[in-house]
Image (cartoon, rainbow, N blue to C red; front, side, top):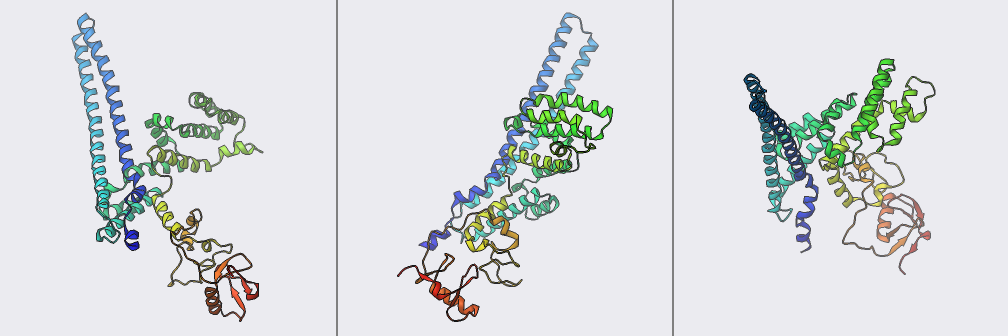
Length: 410
């Protein structure tokens, strides 16, 4: 009965990791609809205005037949342009619905399974692992490898390649010292960013201003002042301290000797990296994407089930092992928590919680406060080759005399 319960699939827990799988297409559909609606409203207003002016002028005799024909041609051209834009939005909507259908079908496969021993579960789990790997590679800029894996596994509709490729392009442009693409993205998502109270656009405008001051010529200084009046001053109520510092930068150029640290920080080349990070955070928050790769979330869950106090001792790792674990070679089994690759990731996860526990017989208390069963201490002392009457802590490796031990239970 216990084994059956352990192998039973908890569908709710599985779906916790897959929330972004459905949420992102939904957010993109909302964004696509808003863009299409804005296009229709904007173009319709222009067309109606032009049509009324043309009709009124024609009836009043103020508009010549040639001008009427010209206005009609203009309206037809605008309508064709609007049709092209709406066709693009329609194609994007079709792509997103296809993607959403594929993801729902993928999750429906899981709902039909009830045990991890089901032969279909292994294949499903493998596909999910591939999805997590693609997500990890896309977030870290390994776009070609991510696309190759998605195509090889035939799961392009299950991963967000297009979204992350766009994000990666803008992030790289910021790292290379250009704010053009990021500002265009901010303009496309202005209302949503305002609701999120994001300061990304303000930081980008400040960076434009800083780059003008960095050139340090009279013409660029005038251009910087004009830029500040147009793009930075409107943020005075939201970010008063930063706006004052921007104004003070006119008197503190990067070539100045003894430049105060707070002004030197604005001119630091590291600001481009910080801007790229700020953009990624705003992008993920806007689309409801997790801050960290889903692979890290999945690994953290598994690591928490294995983690013990022995995995993070006070001594440093010597190779692939930690205190409390035997020295390992390339062919021996390595504790995942103690491995160099996963040790840092496991530091912030809680220790394992086991619903079933047991106590050793004849418990003994060591001087350092740790408790072990007598049989384990005797076995470990024999393996370590200790002298008779000595024992060794299984975790820290400290050696004590048996006379220093105390029985926990009489």
